[in-house]
Image (tube, rainbow, N blue to C red; front, top):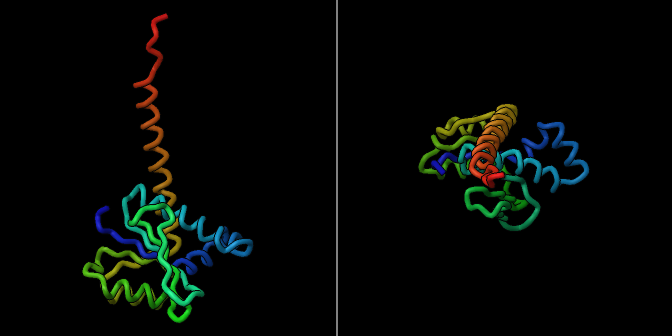
Amino acid sequence: MDDKHLIIDGFNVIFAVPKLVSLFRKSESSAKFELEKLVQLIHDVDLWMVTLVYDGKGSKLDIQHPFAQQTFTVVHCPSDRSADAVIERMITKSHHPDRITVVTNDHLIRDAAHASGAVYQSVEALLDWSESCSKKNASLNRTRKSSIDQDWGNRIPL
């Protein structure tokens, strides 16, 4: 990882994407998992550290690494602290806010990110980025498969 950090306002993204809203109505965890899969491509293909931040219901900050990688984190805030506040704190406490990209359509978080030297990106731009990573990943897999097929061709003389 190159110290590039993508911080995502989780519920803001979910409620900006009709497919995720539909999933959320059926199952909150399914919507969150689908968002995780979308941004996992950015993590794996473009090698960004990713943190998804959600408003929470508990009494403590809950930090998880759903893909068993320390560079991919899901944070559920305690009920007395909003995701917005946690995101703002992450940016202001960073030694390199210029390496942070914050994804949200929330104008207050966008302004806070900009004021702290971080980059803001819209939800729509995130979806485009994820799609681009999906295409890169598919291309890389085709190249690997072709290489493997050549290396493992039938070598039995008949």
